Length: 251
Image (cartoon, rainbow, N blue to C red):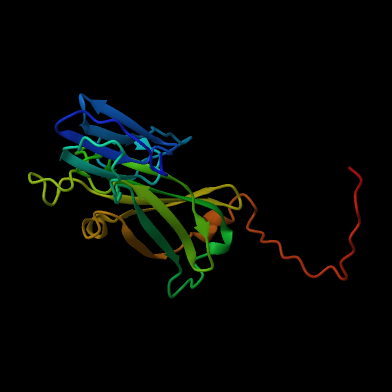
């Protein structure tokens, strides 16, 4: 358990793998020994979802992984003792967060028409599908992470997307992974129930930050014609209605 405990070991060399197992979306798979224990995440879909035009061919869509930490001790030889021996273990992170910042507005439309935004979601493609718990090495397979609802701020949209990092990292045969691209797609539901999207190639930013970081997209502007479509171009404005009166309603 997280508070420690007694574990019986075999005589001779033991390989010890420690990791937290309190996750919701992560799936652990073993192929023979703990040395090959791999963590993946669950497949996820979204109605009428269209992948980023910068996504790699054949990418599946998955949920963002929960926070995951692990440590691996190889060839540990226990002592024959009456009382258990304490082992101090420092777990290392295997899931990392990309803080995505979408800034709205330009010289012609300073507010970027952000006032029309009701909800927003962000998706990140080209990320690793799984990770080995003993080494932290990620798989070569790339997937698209469908994130939760993003936060709407006074300057734009903020989204935190968790992932295992970039594919095949670290790996001697794929030092740069120039064959993998990363697309960051923002999907916005406007107040008139229309959908507006921004699709950006963030490969250069991801390459510099293989294990989480900050991604910035600037100068986003929502087409006003789309934002008011279906409302006849009429933008309602409500003046003050005078003194507020509270009336309790029986339920």
